[in-house]
Image (cartoon, rainbow, N blue to C red):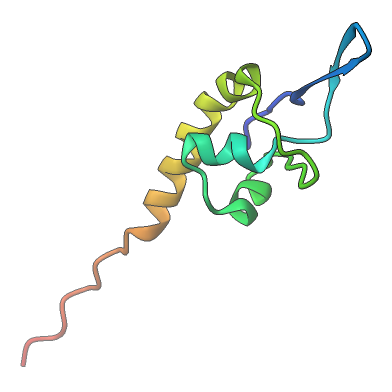
Length: 90
């Protein structure tokens, strides 16, 4: 099941005016702050990643918290191996 995630917020300033807009994806530093190290897995799970951004915005981190729990649980389940059926006894 894929969860829907909103686009991140990007803040910028031109002279005295401050603007916010939707960005392409979340920065690596925002993902690292939540403990997501494997960026390819995050991308496959549907998290948009912007490799050019280097800033960390608190609103984006808050938005990712619930989604990060889902992804980390999925990765833990994949690491667990199903025990093999007991070998035939002779």
